[in-house]
Length: 531
Image (tube, rainbow, N blue to C red; front, side, top):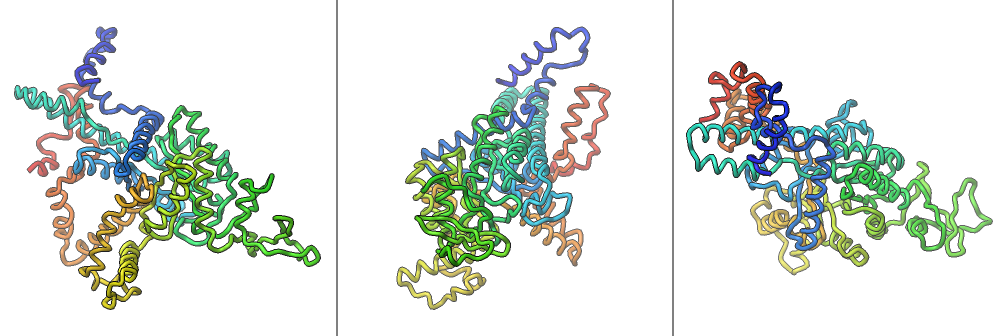
């Protein structure tokens, strides 16, 4: 619906009450409606689910259509990311938000900083989803508000060409509201707890929920040791719980990302229930590290399973956890992925120990033998040492190709001495094209970095503190921050505007007319940044 149509629609709504609703202007109503097109989180979830489904179909048609996101731990961070994307690329297409459970634990818990072990308040995650979308909706209101002001100025000046241009921009306005992939960890309890929390996620606006196959009360960060997985049936029950939550709330095309930690998880808490040989429980148990025992030589308290007519004793740790056989991680990953996609999941997440396209692609090829359109969400993790990993990959490729590597020490490839070398340059090029290449060769539909804004906040704060509290003093802020904000056109250099002062002024004028006491007058110091 065009801007003009919105005004007409608002006028019709006001008309029956015109005698008593004095001063309510149709154009002001139309503007407020345009600035607040999403009234609930469910509106957002339904809108963004359709975007994500369309993007998935586009990727199936051409892997060059992969999507990306950055993890954001505050609404302001997510807002600035999307404002920046619109500024630099003109569209938000293919760019999402990622909500990392790690960052919620480390930065948003009332307990203070916590490790990524699901110890934070479960409600803090949907609260952050709601916060992110509140800030994104405010970014819409701000940008549209500036367009309305420019439109009023063009009309007042009698500039028909600029008026037409601005009306077109308003009609074609692209929202900052984009899909979010939200991390529900291992579900924070049993399947019922997962279902209840998933509903909170969706009601806050999440169209996509990521869940992992670790034991909920033993949950670990995917890049740490000590991970413990659950039997497939337990995980599938949670996937179904999330699907039921989507369906109950009318987000029928909601997206579920099934994450497997089996590649790095060597432990399980449970021996799976087996109904018949070869079923899913039996396949899970087949990976257990067992030794054959004689019935005459059983130990007190031994736990046994029968396999092919033999008595087998799974190896059990003092923690009462059972071990998987070494080297079974990839096979377990592939089985996890296939069964998840066969039971309601839409996308996969394989947590790996390094960013290696060959390793990821090898597993995806096996999965696609059963599920041809299987595709991944992949964590371009800050836990990887990208420089060292890719330099080692290039080093190994050079050795395999018979090239002279005597100038390099594989154990010290992180050294700055290698930055300008053939090896260093080739490694950087592989890092640069990793997402494009992995999308084409390893089935990765969505690339994300879980914790980038955590690291950038720390780095920029360190640089500011070093300069401001050192010899540079105020110049440390002005030269490194404010001057760059102005020159690069960073929106929040006008922080009063970013915080909503102009939106508030518009509303004051709607409500009080000429009597409005507005903040954005000639004496507002923010006007210094207009130069």
